[in-house]
Image (cartoon, rainbow, N blue to C red; front, side, top):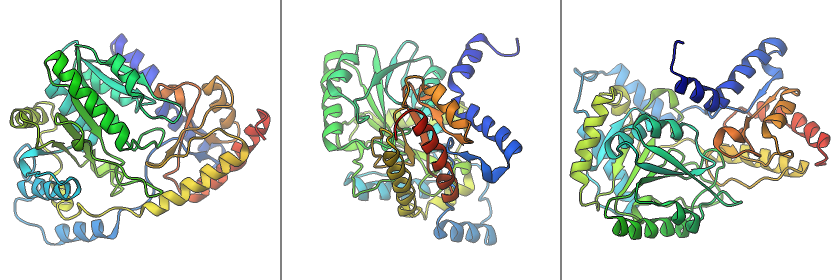
Length: 395
């Protein structure tokens, strides 16, 4: 056996997105690229903003000696200072470079945070539906995931969360705007979570961290506000990347930000920097650190995603699908018209439409559609969705 039984099991359970990707490759070979409508991956097709290209051109055409060498494991001081300035403007809190660690994307950042704060047997709460990799990141560092379901609008239930905060709870991970649902947690929800964790910290005599995966923060629609977690809980950490707001997921550039009101932040930051090194990341990519220093206020045009959302949402509702309208990210998470979401996804595949079953996100009975795609893919998928809707009596 080339890999462990545990890994085999994880690969089998957690590979739904990859499975759909591979199905798409096979279908495209058989029917042609333009006849397959793959809505399974969250891989943005929108190009980076002009500011990104200008900065890239500047650094490539006018290189600075030593610009590709090692730097402090936390990242370039000037880049961290730029991030701190951006966060200070957005939160009103006195961030400095000393609260920032540059990372290899949000995935790297989450692993660094978990490595720093959990011990074997600690529990980390996540809300379902969840980004499936959370399960494996938590397992990477010897902790245990505790999954808490959300309500019918995909919003956390504070009373249910309270039932699941136990003496062994070390952290709660939030993801708003959410993958896979597009739900955005408002002030009341965030305040309720923060107040609960404050009470539980005192009760159990240990920090319970509130970790916010903010990767989709700037992709919000309809005038909805996405509040920063720092307002609600002192032991709070934001992990994010520029994969979505600058449309550069392959560049793996992100950061960790620790609440400047957290009294033990210096020890925590030292731990994060150490873990950034010993996990093998060493430091975030040097060239990207130079670029994003000047891009903290830049973003892709979110109205392009909003138009794609509206096209898909309105079309699905018109066909009879049950859909909660997403207010952020670039996913829609409709309810499957049959209980077996995997079987439903297979029916869509007969029409060359690929989506991901909700089972892959801890929410059987739903399916995820990504709309960070070219319009022809979304438009081309609609006849398939309509045909299956008719098959199951939705329209």
